Length: 494
Image 1: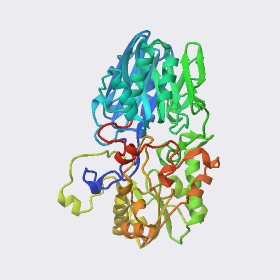
Image 2: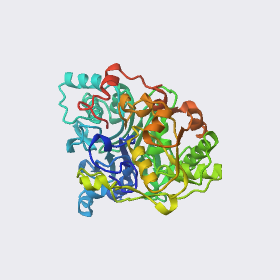
Image 3: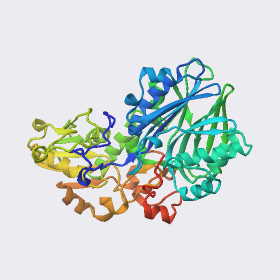
Image 4: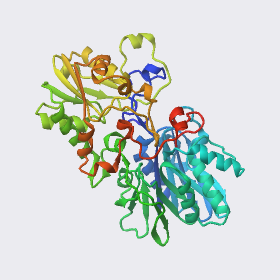
């Protein structure tokens, strides 16, 4: 997994249930660029490198040089999948890229994106971030058309529907709009064709997508899941792709199409809290600033006297700094993260287990010994990581441990492109705050309120999806999908 992101905080990184991932996982990052006479494959590589935190299982790039498509995709990190030699074999004037995290049962090379399909107008490459909730309906439609599904992902279904529409006589734009109008759920797409690239966002804008441009390069445009991918290649941020908008980018510039009736925007609040990089900008500020405000609000709501405040690296640190500033309690580094440890399927020895192996986080004993400690983290999903963390802090000599969480309790699963546990596995869905505190072994535990989380955005609270905290899903979830939690083995997220 990506070395500078705490998506896997479990202390013993193996595949046993007790050590499984105890954080929500983002599904994908997408990137697209139209830049004639530039090394578009190399620029896409760096864009994906900046988006590596959004998916570490597979990566892929597709480029067009006139009518010819070139592509490379494989399992692994961006830096492992691509080499200078491979990038040199991906010429062109436009490109899209994808980095992916999959749900259980979908860790297969065939599911690596971009998805490639052949149409009467030439080949099409598609990259998708999000998750559709009407996949059963789409699958039935495609099978009735005689289409063969070669992957287990909903992204292929979108590409195949576009192919069917193109082959029936539609243009690229007409076909894509028609396909998107059939899709229900969350989707941010980048699509490459021989003639240009498209960027599309679902009507609620649940997953992010931004538009940028290369300075001093007229007509060179970039689209990406986050602004950090623009920064890395020196592109300027122009604006967000609007919910329900399709952008067509070619040698004439950018053309906008509003393909869906206007509805309430519902950006995923977990993008704000955790998923997106803290240096990415949302609503005209960095997410670092928002996360500091979460910590300040948390201090106002659940102050407790202590000697130091520490954050769980890396995503808990901005909120910990905010908590410290608002409370007056000194901030300290109490946990050191090994940023070069990824997920491993090699089991630690029993002796290592008994010794309390800490592969990813190690407490600073001289900082913690004899101290009353407030620990800030962004969320608790199952509680397994928190329990190990608390034990490690006590072993290091902390006299009191007061955990504060900069989001409300996660009580409902996500169906829009985040891999969360089923509801019965979410600790806050089955236990009270007091019971959770007892299970993870802290002296006190408090979560940020739902109102506090939304008020800290300083935006309309109705413009965010917070269904994982409330169960109020902005896009209706079919009963069959709720029961099967995305039909795990049958259809995985894009």
